[in-house]
Length: 425
Image (cartoon, rainbow, N blue to C red; front, side):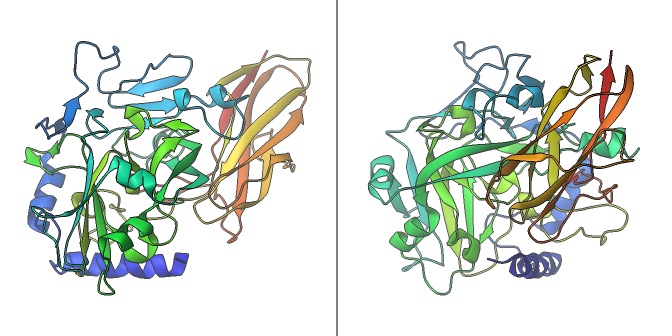
């Protein structure tokens, strides 16, 4: 599916939403606007069959996240854990699972693989099966289908959000990520399109709505239900994976065990974890995650918000602490990574003097359109003092990182060049 086609889809869905054409366990537009004003979020912990919530005596002391979160690898924000970029300096192309970032809306569920079922229903399937009488696959059914393995990055739409404030002087809401809410892994699973066709996909289908098995999300006193976000059928049939392995091993609970979606190049919310059901509809589908959240709001955008966000933007990061302290009197090998949701990275430039001069780094690994490009540059600081390192990438479509990103209230898709502070002593 081309970027232009995705933009047309987004604009169409935005217009339908504004006209009140909400289908698919969506709240009314009035209710969603009310919750947007209501304020802080809470967690809803209603039990689901076959699921145990992670708030148990044997849970590591990491709150809603189950895997260890050592401080040299992660910065923890409640239900979320950001990878520290210095932890990626010598790990290779794929981010090891132990240091892959975690983005949870509520808490990590413990799902029993043997009792797990993927339930498919809706008017876009042959015979229009209902939620009470769906098409079902268990894990063994899924594992028997043709499998595929590919590498792809996942990235939260709010990655880089803190720089709207610290670098641009604005005010935004949400988790104050720097650039560590991203990671490339090797995913193995079954094409979503294979499962949809097996379930009886019809030519009339337009949207699919995957939903997770994590606890319901409650915002402003309104239960928004399980985390879910619709995909156009064209994207679902393209390159979306129902993944059950990550980096050659079964998924960890925090990363979606037993099965999650991987939606390459799109914002992370599309890659639903712990997927348990998929509605397939011949009408446009909506949820709070493409109406209330994951759109642009604020000055410069329509009163009702922008179209739903889909593809990621161009970013670059140095494999250094933020801020970094480096020794004087020696040549330092600066390393970093650049990536884009629009395709492979074509060019990277690096500045070690705050943007006055720019150099082309050596490309260590040239990634494809789903991954990232690794690069390095030798730098001998002129002497002790404070410096700003900058990296700017350009992708295959010609999109490049600007000096400033237009602000939006929720702090999504920051793509400006980040000014990385370094003290040499």
